Image (cartoon, rainbow, N blue to C red; front, top):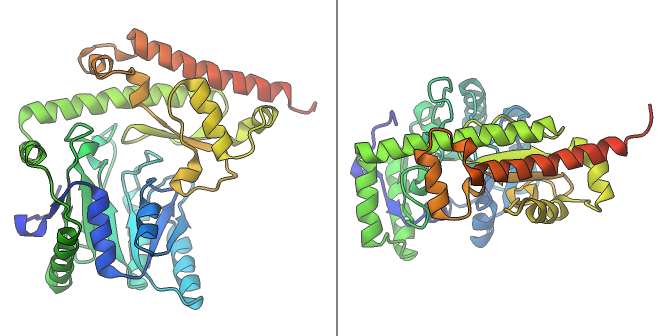
Length: 354
């Protein structure tokens, strides 16, 4: 994706998690992550016994920390005896489905370089832009080729779920050579091997033949349409959500519906998760699972469950000229709309008189 990537610079592993574990074990020190972030970023650091410190993201996008908040966090940690060395970020973000503008990314990278941080860019969702011609996405490795390791889980776009394979691109130069060598040692110690059938499928997918690229493009269009419909439903009900720009998720803030949540006894993100999972009939993980505040009423909604509860039903959307009119999709979106509209109506009934 615009970067030279010779085979001897691109290790393969069963998951992006294994690649990130190897990179973190190699670098040592404390880990910095944006808030919110992918659900697995913080647990992996804890598994290694490394502290992971969240850094707030700007209101307009997720995945990349605010540059001033990053500087403040690094300097505070060092003043307290910490040793921040690694910043993990994502320009095409899970969970917020946002894409970071190049100008903000540049400011954050400048702050990271000034503090001597190495960066890992998780670009699992970069090939799932909902408007690829209207969205500018730059990899941090394009701006800082010698300080950024790129990791990509192929299940994001190129491989089906259940076929675990991921690749990384280490930076060039002497530092990159050392990181690559020590990273391979860590992967070997983890026995992080890709099963032969999956390796064959990954090699085929990475060559990007027409059947693969056509299916990827169709899948992106489908999830983009469903995500847009879900976004319209939750915003019309008074909730807050950034317009989804990539991936298969939607990050929703229900703070404006607080009176209704209070009436249902919902006091934190875990209780909100339980409530919406039951009402929607699909997983609705709370924001606390993504490093967000437990007290904040936020959830991540996924588009995949809205396409149907079986692989056959979900596949129908790929071939349908009007996927939103399919019975299973229409039913799921109607249920989503009804649940959020009910919360809106409850909140209005409980507003104090003006």
